[in-house]
Length: 288
Image (cartoon, rainbow, N blue to C red; front, side, top):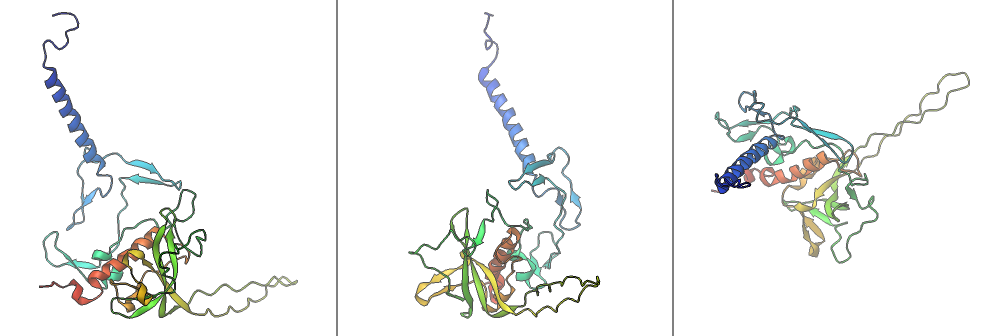
């Protein structure tokens, strides 16, 4: 054998093929472990017991650093402990679930939503990504586009549910995300402001608090995702086909009237989406 003749006694092509097989097998193993970071460990649908696939198949927990300074670890042991307000229609595993209450408000089926963080989604600068035009004053509605503010909101039953009060924009992707609807004939009573406390008297005895004024009921406002809206410019209205006018009163509300959290967005979108199936009894029945 001449010096340097490494491939004289071997099939180089076959060695490269085997090396590729080993690499590809390792890649598949790595990917199959990494895809178990979310949704694992599994739990039995019937017994609720944990179905542990073994240490080999589940990766070690990894901590991800989030832009807001927080962290998130995956996989994690936190479980969704919400009560499922539905029951299987049959005794076999995987049977469809039948709602036991109001599915649109109980988060069942198309009304299901993820437990996202209950805080506004933030921009890189820290300000909330979604905001109404009364807050995001540097945004405006394009003059050549219809301005929905002041338009009537007509529900699936043809009844006017309210009027568009304001427009919510996405600051990251400049576009309308939600319409803020002031409902017709639906009011809420805000919590009264605390009464001011008078300074103590010279004798050191605290003066009695002044009675708080009763809070005046105000019109209820809810968000309407723009994806559920169809403009009717000729009639100066927007149409919503997913829910009825009376069901607008049960749309999840906001903790802060000028901010929407990620959890609130998911709940609101799920409520409107569920209306396509649950708003009327006939929508969930077979056509034939």
